[in-house]
Length: 560
Image (tube, rainbow, N blue to C red; front, side):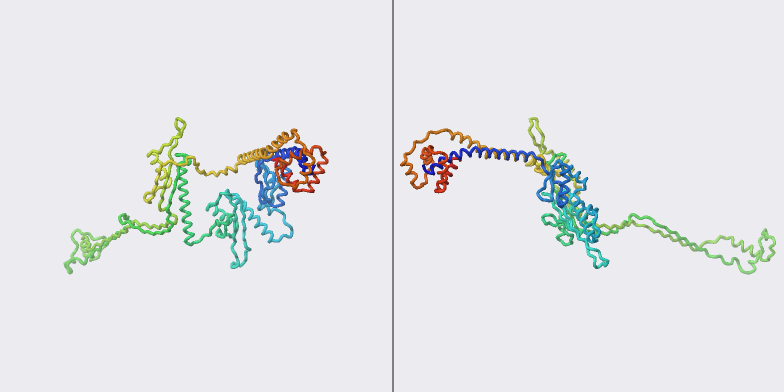
């Protein structure tokens, strides 16, 4: 009996002995993997507790969580710690009660006792670092911002004015995926930082995002910058008017049933006008002055000079008592002559009136950004109602409804016909009736919902179990059943004569199908003991390794 025949005879026995052992090992491995998958899918979901932690803070927080019985794990980076989602608030409250974390406390850094030999420079550096930390924390509280860092450049003030240098600051913001900062939010960050640092101008604050984009563009007077500001102003006006229209019509036509587009022509020129206007028809007497003058000529001597005028008084004229003047008669005559009334000879009158005329002085200055013209286009979907049979029916709006919507739109945008505004409302069916409107409330993505994540973990575990059963367990069980069928006793082939056996042993090895070799030599190996077969197999391996390798490959092919 040749060594090759002995190896062929011992091979099936060895394979039959190892197959159950391999099957048990595979089943045990499959069960272990399945249990691990189930435990992983049913385990708690972890959420971020703290990030950007110093090494000493991580150690203290880990000890505090272990003492509180809260499970934790390190995140994707070494400076983050995660705890189960349902225990995030509890963990933060317990850590805050112990004053943790300490290094993220901002101005809490100043409460630490410093050594006796700390210089003034180090004290200033600690204060600046605490201020930067507080500003970064405040900026990170904005909804679109995930994280922020603030760098301050505050030079030391000099007693000489010419040696003074202005302060500056730079802000780095890490935005959340899919989020962006509006212009108002960027300006708010700039003024927040500028107001926190003495003698820091808003123009000296720079804001940059994680993509390297400059968010706080410096203010310049060049034509390109001014034009960009004008376009941004017009765009904001258009968005505001469109938002007003959609918010006004949504309760009437339903969510997502209205679309509005507004084009605003903004006059960015600045005009100044001074005007003085008079109204002569509206006169009012302010003052009046009257002046009258009259002159009377004096009377000269009366009568004829001489003796004729020196006549005694008329009879019956009584002289005054004690008047012995001889000239009394003449005086009496003169008095009688003066009783004749005097007649004026010259009269002058003068009148002066002052009138006030209505006068208007007006100074008008029109600032830039005046709305010159407004064009509004509104598209309204058909009305959808539920019919008696449960089907959705569409019908267009009536002319009265369109007119009513047009009046509402005009009132919402401040329609001015003299300005040349135009409003056009059209009723047409929408192709996508299931489109939901974008509400003001910001909703998280669907994949960030805890229920969706838990369901995904369960589905992943189930898929892994199915793959494990189909790929590992099923072939092992099938191989075990096939081994049972192969172990049944079969009829032994007839033995060969010794001459044929020696001829087969001396013949050189030739490649031929294994199915013809095994039945021919298996009958002669049954009479030998197992120890002899093993000894012959070892000698065959040392003498002809290539033949043995061919036999082993045949066994593997047979097992498969």
